[in-house]
Length: 360
Image (tube, rainbow, N blue to C red):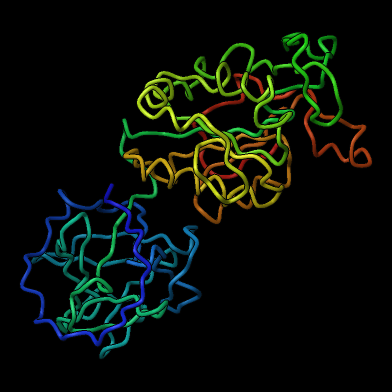
């Protein structure tokens, strides 16, 4: 995976016209994925997008922002959108076409530092100009792009994130309906009530017993546990957020074991990020890991939570999400809607499944 650019600065001086690129085209098999979905990210950390036939720039990384780069011969490639339309230089305008001829052929060349330029048959470069897609003879910062796989190759890092209440926990004190849950006597949890914190079967057995044991970990919760420095919050960080990769990472980055809030992501553990918007903080955690040397493709991120309403919005970022606690719902809350779990997550619910998955 190529390095993410965080640059988003305005240029205050007139731009000099650089000579047309003399960089050799990058060999696709060595430098960017071929024939698999990718994101094409600009210097402004935004994404090339096919919006119903218009080439645009987007802050999201969902289906409309996915492209497939294919070999077109002679060092050129085609760049196909989710609508099976190919990026085209139409007399200086970036457009989309069903053709795969000269106008739809591009050369991708290294720009250094993990970035590339994308040059058309007219020797002009694709550019993000303040959020507008343009073509230019320049090959400077505005014409630099990152090509990032939607899903990494086998063995790539993965990331599992969890809600707290009724995902890592079950109903406080209830081991009758939830016999595999574990009560932590004296450690208080106010989530959906009050009482001794009660680990779900997943949290009791251990996240490391699932495929997430191979992954980095995180939390994104609408609630706050029992407060930043409480015994319950400390227990979550010290005992529940455990996997071999996470243990190694936290030993190397001890500052990571702290709480973040909302979209101000300064660690992998986020509190008070509301329902239906958790996807923004999960993407923030993914990018936070990237800034600390762990590049994780969006398709290798898995979020688990009990609330039905939180799953679908993750499609905005091509991140996988799954509703859990499917066998036990709390019918006393929210007018008997059943949108909240009861016993919490179980180990068998954690699988490498793609997309947005709801309880049946």
